[in-house]
Amino acid sequence: MSVSDKSEVKKSGGLGETLSVVVQALVLALIIRTLLFQPFSIPSGSMRPTLLEGDYLFVSKFSYGYSHFSLPFSPDLFSGRIWASEPKRGDIVVFKLPSDTSVDYIKRVVGLPGDRIQMRQGVLYINDVPVKREKIGEIDNPDITEQNRPVDVYRETLPNGVSYDTLELSPNSIGDDTRVFEVPAGHYFMMGDNRDNSLDSRFTVGYVPFENLVGRANLIFFSIAGGASPLELWRWPADIRLNRLFTSVNAAPHIVGGN
Image (cartoon, rainbow, N blue to C red; front, side, top):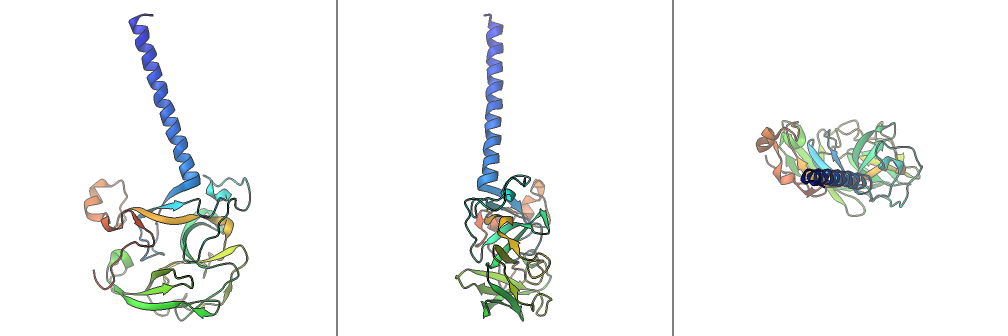
């Protein structure tokens, strides 16, 4: 074998090794995305102040087991869930919209199967018992509230002890007084923390089947304000929210009582 032949063999082997590494990396990424964690971005303000538009977060796919909605492109290969684990009250969940499963929504679980849910004068009732609710101050920061004025903040504490903050944009909104919703077996009642600006189970979203749950929101890994894209690197110095990077969705910082 000549020197040139040896060189050609070495080049060929190097290319093959590179392709092998690339394929293995793609397969690993697919497995992680399908079975473990999937990135999502927040496109609307319905979960303010907990989640903001421009937040990018990881959703744990394994938290509730797997349905066909857990798979890329949601192929209808099987029904129900495997290795199922039910969500807890207060979990922030990504789910497929029951009326259009091509659309992902993110809301908080407030009603479990068999619960009676109602809003009365802005207070959440679960099984005819009011959820603890206390005003803790106000936020005067349009990046958090989308309002150019101070907005009242209320902290709710669910029966299982999960606490979170909600915004009250208006004292008499259409969702502040509702009928009683009786959550069917195998379904969940979802609400946004931005109570006066959330399309959720009080309205057209309705009850969400267990099968439609994609996963539980866990970690904010990136956040950028002003409607900027993460690819617009030149906007990072002014618009990136450094205090939200790598924070739990249940501990994302926001400012009460100031700018």
